[in-house]
Amino acid sequence: MPPRAQKVRKQYKNSDHPHIILRFEDGHEIDIPKGTAKSFDAYVGERIKILAVYDPTANEREKIDTLRAEQFEDEMG
Image 1 (cartoon, rainbow, N blue to C red):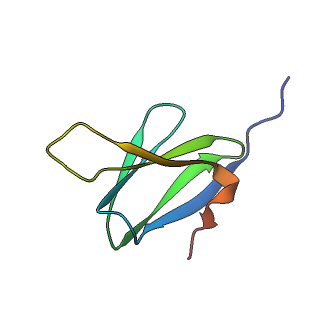
Image 2: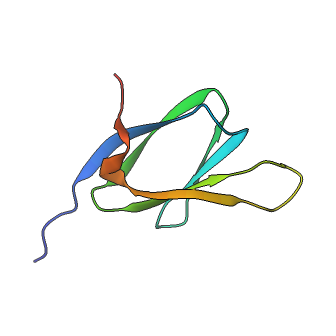
Protein backbone atom coordinates (compact mmCIF):
# COMPACT_ATOMS: atom_id res chain seq x y z
CA MET A 1 0.00 0.00 0.00
CA PRO A 2 1.30 3.50 -0.79
CA PRO A 3 1.98 5.82 2.16
CA ARG A 4 -0.85 8.11 3.22
CA ALA A 5 -0.61 11.71 1.99
CA GLN A 6 0.31 14.19 4.71
CA LYS A 7 -2.10 17.08 5.15
CA VAL A 8 -0.80 20.53 6.16
CA ARG A 9 -2.53 23.75 7.25
CA LYS A 10 -1.17 26.81 5.41
CA GLN A 11 -2.14 30.41 4.69
CA TYR A 12 -1.76 33.02 1.97
CA LYS A 13 -1.96 36.80 2.42
CA ASN A 14 -2.84 38.98 -0.55
CA SER A 15 -1.19 42.36 -0.08
CA ASP A 16 -0.22 43.18 -3.69
CA HIS A 17 -3.02 42.35 -6.12
CA PRO A 18 -6.68 43.47 -6.33
CA HIS A 19 -7.85 39.84 -6.17
CA ILE A 20 -6.04 36.49 -5.93
CA ILE A 21 -7.35 33.03 -6.66
CA LEU A 22 -5.59 29.91 -5.40
CA ARG A 23 -6.32 26.98 -7.74
CA PHE A 24 -5.65 23.50 -6.33
CA GLU A 25 -4.83 20.32 -8.27
CA ASP A 26 -8.32 18.92 -7.68
CA GLY A 27 -9.82 22.03 -9.34
CA HIS A 28 -11.25 23.84 -6.33
CA GLU A 29 -10.41 27.50 -5.86
CA ILE A 30 -10.11 29.95 -2.97
CA ASP A 31 -10.75 33.69 -3.54
CA ILE A 32 -8.61 36.14 -1.58
CA PRO A 33 -9.41 39.88 -1.91
CA LYS A 34 -6.60 42.42 -1.44
CA GLY A 35 -5.65 43.06 2.19
CA THR A 36 -6.92 39.71 3.49
CA ALA A 37 -5.42 36.34 4.33
CA LYS A 38 -7.01 32.92 4.16
CA SER A 39 -6.02 29.57 5.61
CA PHE A 40 -6.43 26.28 3.78
CA ASP A 41 -5.63 22.58 3.99
CA ALA A 42 -3.40 21.01 1.35
CA TYR A 43 -1.31 17.90 0.88
CA VAL A 44 2.49 17.91 0.95
CA GLY A 45 3.70 18.04 -2.65
CA GLU A 46 0.42 19.41 -4.02
CA ARG A 47 0.94 22.18 -6.59
CA ILE A 48 -1.17 25.29 -6.10
CA LYS A 49 -1.44 27.97 -8.79
CA ILE A 50 -1.60 31.61 -7.70
CA LEU A 51 -3.73 33.60 -10.16
CA ALA A 52 -4.34 37.38 -10.16
CA VAL A 53 -7.62 38.93 -11.32
CA TYR A 54 -7.38 42.60 -12.27
CA ASP A 55 -10.80 43.06 -13.92
CA PRO A 56 -13.65 41.17 -12.21
CA THR A 57 -15.93 41.68 -15.23
CA ALA A 58 -13.50 39.83 -17.53
CA ASN A 59 -12.68 36.13 -17.49
CA GLU A 60 -8.94 36.80 -17.63
CA ARG A 61 -6.55 35.57 -14.96
CA GLU A 62 -2.81 36.13 -14.84
CA LYS A 63 -0.69 33.32 -13.45
CA ILE A 64 1.62 34.78 -10.80
CA ASP A 65 3.30 31.58 -9.61
CA THR A 66 2.89 27.89 -8.87
CA LEU A 67 4.00 26.72 -5.43
CA ARG A 68 3.98 23.42 -3.61
CA ALA A 69 1.85 23.35 -0.47
CA GLU A 70 4.86 23.25 1.83
CA GLN A 71 6.18 26.52 0.34
CA PHE A 72 3.27 28.55 1.76
CA GLU A 73 3.40 30.09 5.24
CA ASP A 74 2.14 28.01 8.13
CA GLU A 75 -1.24 29.06 9.47
CA MET A 76 -0.98 31.53 12.32
CA GLY A 77 -3.07 30.18 15.20
